[in-house]
Length: 442
Picture (spheres, rainbow, N blue to C red):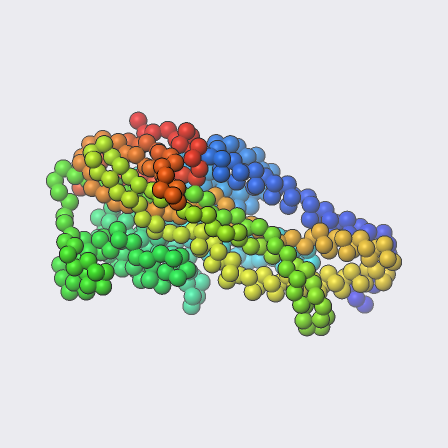
């Protein structure tokens, strides 16, 4: 006896109604709220985006809702509440590691949005990085260090192909160095160099000059002359001489998260089912539109010190690479779903008549939705610089330039520099109007 035995018109109609309800209830409204939140961000209204995010129904309090609330809180400088939401996201991701049979069945019968979203690998790793940066802003380096250790475990737990993130390795090194653990910092800097080399094609980034100089500086401090000379030759920086921190100076590390990662859009593709039923079917899959030109960032100070920030993470490229890697499996599930829906449509028509068959066809078409979920409050790029400043209060201007080199925004900050210490300044900028939402430190 198959699953269609004993179906009558009322049962079939009920099933069709349930499928339509599953498609529209929650999914559409939640998508609309996410688009509204993203629209507020692109208009520079972080405050409004936060209001929209926190009004989402409790039933939709999933991983992405927690990630977005955490990031928006971080953008507004509420680092404690940001980490509270990030911690919730971590626990939700952990809970999703055991995927339920009902979710898999729902994905096969309806669409991929029926599956719990635990985030792509790069998103899971960056979650730890942002929690660490929050702890740094709260002057809790011990907790930041713990997050980096957890990120290391996360990057290694994916087996023979670990998802290594060069910026996370670099950030780990900076945290270790700020805590005086220079041996560990050097290990992390070396690892960051290796990962930048391995992921260069994926991210389109070389080894940051800042990282090269950090390696030189620590190698010189440890007296590792041979390795230092090899790297100077490799990097074509034979004339660069690392210098120790002069008296009366400290270091400022500036990390700017600029722009917004692209959002996934739905695209329809006509393909062959192959296998038992050879037919042309229309399936819906996620895609990214063309990348926007990234903004560049420059730092100026009232002490006549200036520096351009370097890209250390191309989140835009990571997002696209992750989708490219997932696409074969996404297509496999979509085609399998098309076959199941084709069979169900024919069986419903056979048992319920032409009208029921038509309703089933409509239900199948409407419920075939692409899974466009992603962490949309991530930046397009992460940029960084390290510079030495005189001890005392320093006025900082973070200047944002568009692709044509025009200054479009300035964020004004004040930082207290301490002798021989590293001070971290971590900022977000997503749109020209955002500067009006940023209050300079007193």
